Image (spheres, rainbow, N blue to C red):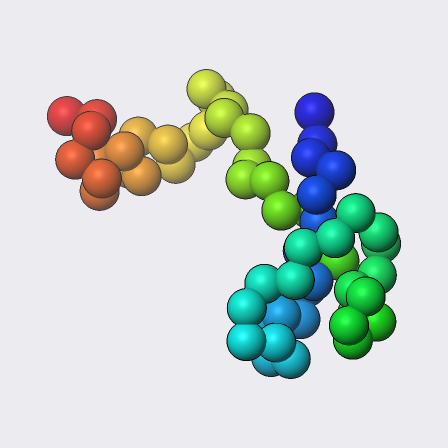
Length: 59
């Protein structure tokens, strides 16, 4: 399930802070927007073991 809330894809270059919207384009600069939700958890992630070890949780 994807989030309906989107963020300007160029906010790091053009804005002081993230610009959130529900449309496909940024209301301030007209750039495309991208999904603001993090990637879903995947138990079959081939690098998940290493990522958890770096965070100190998968030992």
